[in-house]
Length: 220
Image (cartoon, rainbow, N blue to C red; front, top):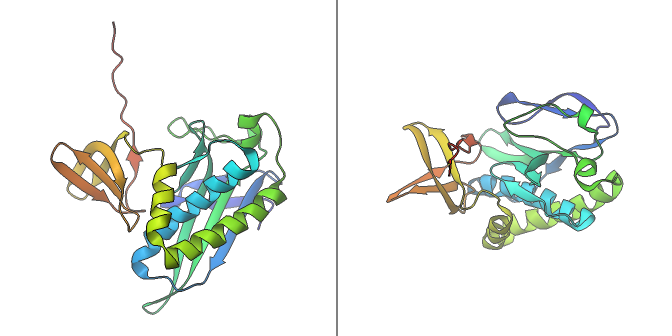
């Protein structure tokens, strides 16, 4: 845990800001029997655990946004960054970095027009006890890890219920070029299924960025 961080980072070396005493800034060391092909599912499970924690404590409808964000009312309030720890070719642990914006004011948050950020306090109109959130987060993380190991199908089903991009039109840059389509669902390995007509693509977890296209305004 940290009370404040000045060099926090997310995917693709993006920065993660956390005001002093306002956030949950934590790294959990996860050590349990984890098949390598379930790393992507675990990553999604971390976001599921955060969203479920926020829902339980605040009674607000937090959702996941593939691959690693948690949003509330369309604004980002949390992110996860899992990093695998290897000894030669053996996976020995996963470092699960979790950041939750809890009690920041608008002035303490960075301006991000593409992905507007907010805090639980701003979106609910009241401050929240970070300790209470942490206690419940630990419970949900333990449950998610158990599902990854013993019942990955159940975890995937939970993730799909919370995934806000399902049915949305998104675009992504892949090795074969830019693609655009409708989000059809999640693959068991955590990849996103994207389809357009008869074509379908699997977007690997953590290797691509998505954006929702700006559609032209229709004048009636």
